[in-house]
Image: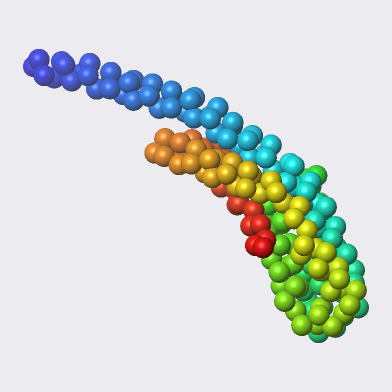
Length: 179
């Protein structure tokens, strides 16, 4: 009889305690997630400005290759689309989308640099050399470090569900060119 009476009080007490722990975890996780996301956004902005200048150089390569036929023409079409997405993303997209577009542009730049047709076009080759030599991404390591810290904040048995409920999700790192 005593055990039953004790259980009547103990079970609700445990449930209330669990709810208090969950509510406290939720309330403490949110500011940390907001701070980490803000840090990612803040470190992205100067890098996005630097990359905007860099992609102007890539657009110059694009212009030099507009009349080229064959496999290079397909890459130029992809580059046109990627440059257009990048331009729109600067005012209308999330950091996640902007970083994805930047990584896509870097990959297209690498593909173009290795195309044999580019080597035979003097103007295009010169424009590509200018683009390849540009190092307008010195904020990449700072941004990538902020993304790693943000990803760490998204993990954990309490944080992961809270982050998911609040709409926080992973952001890609910027893949800076090697060299």
